[in-house]
Image (cartoon, rainbow, N blue to C red; front, side):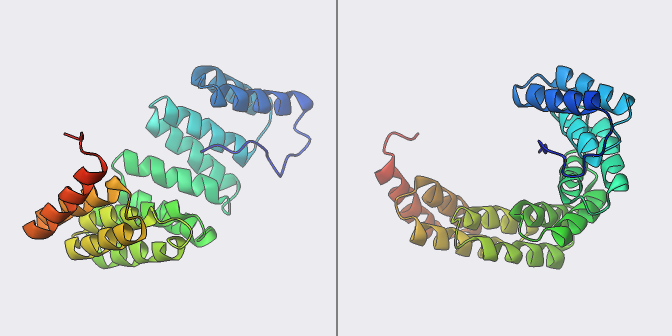
Length: 220
């Protein structure tokens, strides 16, 4: 996740700003190597900005260079410890690299700085699950309740997270809530059926699979 504008732009030089903006355009076009080169050029001529380092990190991440991305994100949060987006991206990168303890610390920071980004809580919950902190994972998943009123898909996110954290009954409840809210959405019934089957509630699974098939009868 990049940021397109730097609200703290200092007079680094007009050239640095130009390189930064061109790098963002190349990133948006999917030309990651070109974007990386432009961000590095901006840094080389003195544009020492947390936003540039964040965007460089996102570009490295897109190129599959996760360990280098981590270093870039860490530089961003060193320059500005209150830069929530870089903490969030750092958490994502640590998680994908399997560095779950580090991911927890980054997501804890990002969720504290911006509790209104639901991805901070879902990332934190998933990271807690990976290190066996079930109670902490449960608390983070429940924080997502605040987002469900405007986005019902949050219930399915919670279901997956509860299942991963070892709370299958709570996962089932979230699936049931989702299908109550979205009775024509096949995804909800399919997820409900899978969770019910895993719990051994086969009649409930049969019912949910049946409802899903009524919506999409050709789904193998």
